[in-house]
Image 1 (cartoon, rainbow, N blue to C red):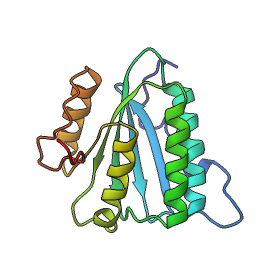
Image 2: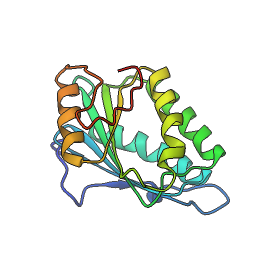
Image 3: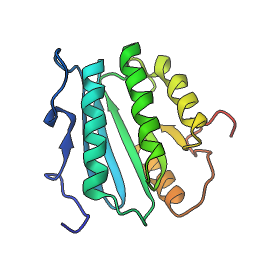
Length: 171
């Protein structure tokens, strides 16, 4: 494998076992041009986040070269709502991931403003990412998100987004 993925080369959270209850929500990822390209379909329960944690580990193990900075673009579909248990698992998984060796430089989220749950969840995620000093920006346009993460990978660590929807509240 060359590190480049095509549309058939992806990992889904549904590929992994979950707890005693069915997962609600799915996380799909492929690696393309140095970017983890996630598509998240919610709403999400704790079982879905358990599967997401496994999918993230598998994705970084498969595609990440430790010497090269990477970024993620996350497209949210249908809903961004998570139960409190699911959000707690998201936070715990992110903290474990960030404590491990990685070269993740930035995360861009793409979602329409009216996406179910995004207004409610937005500040929770922003606070979490700011606490860990991982740049997160929210965009409505995929093109703007791709431009921003490319700049972040090149080391231009400006947290402001051209769309005016910066996730960083102290920008």
